Amino acid sequence: MIPEAYKEVIQDIKVEEVHRKVVDEKAEVTSIYGTPEEMQEKAKEGYFVRDSERNLVYCPAGEMLRQKCVKKNGNIRYANKNACRHCKNRNKCYKGKNEWKEIDFTKDQLQKPCKDWLKTEGKELEKTKVKEKWHYEKVKIVKFFLKPDREKMSQRMSLSEHPFGTIKRAMGATYFLLKGIQKVAGEFALFCLGYNLERAKNLLGFQKMMELMEQA
Image (cartoon, rainbow, N blue to C red):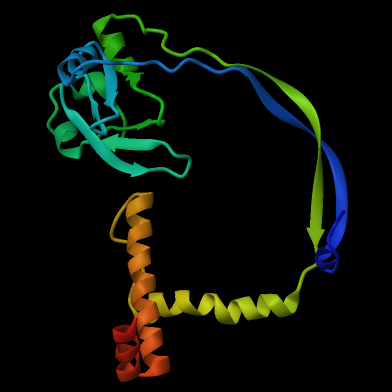
């Protein structure tokens, strides 16, 4: 049953049949346990080995790649620009257009093969992945189509869009200085804090705002 409060905003309801992927057996995650020295020895065989505790990656040349950013899909990107620029084994590892190598790991991955390195050394690639077994199932889902409300959209433009324009234009926060989801979230929280303080000062006055802050 749909509550009466929601009937006013719902325009249409449809029941559709879709295919959903269902995993029968989860893939085994390749695990590498041991000391950093053991990880470095494994990397020298032609693999990028990730140390999840220290959040870094050992490359086949013996260098350490640090976290560069976290992508939208959750993958962690590692790189070491200075090491790649001065690496003597660059041709065995990376042949791209950029000056350094960037490699992505999921949160569960602990090693990745360097195919060019293994090919140059004449070594065979180790099979580290186990494929998942899955199938598709037909399920029915309910879709709700809401009525467009022009009045609320105009209110949104005047209320929620205004702070972003003020932060960008008046406060000069036109771009982020940091990289990564957590760092950018912290930086944006500081932008909002500054905006809220400026807004409170304009509405209450500086003296009144300080009195309220002392009472809090």
